[in-house]
Length: 331
Image 1 (spheres, one colour):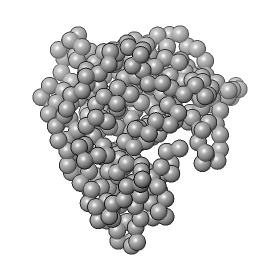
Image 2 (image 1 turned 90 degrees about the vertical axis):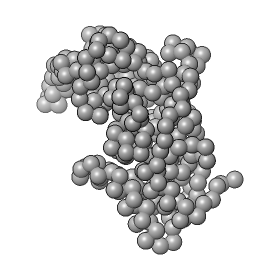
Image 3 (image 1 turned 180 degrees about the vertical axis):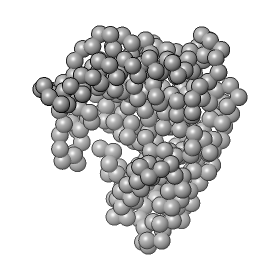
């Protein structure tokens, strides 16, 4: 039966999601190489036939996509730019990750160095964005050297993952106590980094069929986030201060053939309530109160604020019609 709450409760809790939080409860993780603990992924379509988005079973999608390898780019302006990107820019970016300490940040957590952490709170996402680019390149053609470099990078990233599933090189040592605190959820990019991890892992999986990085992202969600954060009286608030993780969780939901636990945490990150919650608004003031409460937590810049406004408006627009959260774009 659909859970119902009052509009006042909804607005209050959505704002509280950006302000409340608490400590951590460690949860033992399955072995990193334990295939029996892997989440089953959908094989319809198979990994190498999925498009940039897997819309094969999305009933509300108006357009259908094709896998990247099904598209050929003939000689011309864009073909030459793409060649330069794959053959020169990507290898160069891999070297810059090394030169700017991004990989050392992971190695020091493995005990392979004692250099200080380098870079801002979103430093880990630089590695994940590069892996996503490599993943798309490998979806179109085998590139052994780029593939080998990515594999080495992924091994070093995954080796830094905590036993409870947490993976972040910034909130460690004296910053560990800040993990998932209200201000950190709002400004600290923890969930933003996780979103890029999952997106990079998704692209890489679709280019190679290898799921080491993807399994690390799933462990972060399943072992660290879900037991402690999200919907439920016994859970702590979860709030995505920077739009990113939502898109990754939607695609993860699709890849697993419709796993509800990721769908719920997606909706919770946006609103503070699970997908099964049904709410309606009767006045514009009630909608504006919610919108402004979330808006204040996403003040990063014009582009990010525009994206956040689009997400908030579309989600709340669905709610005003009395439709359930499960139709808010996650299928």
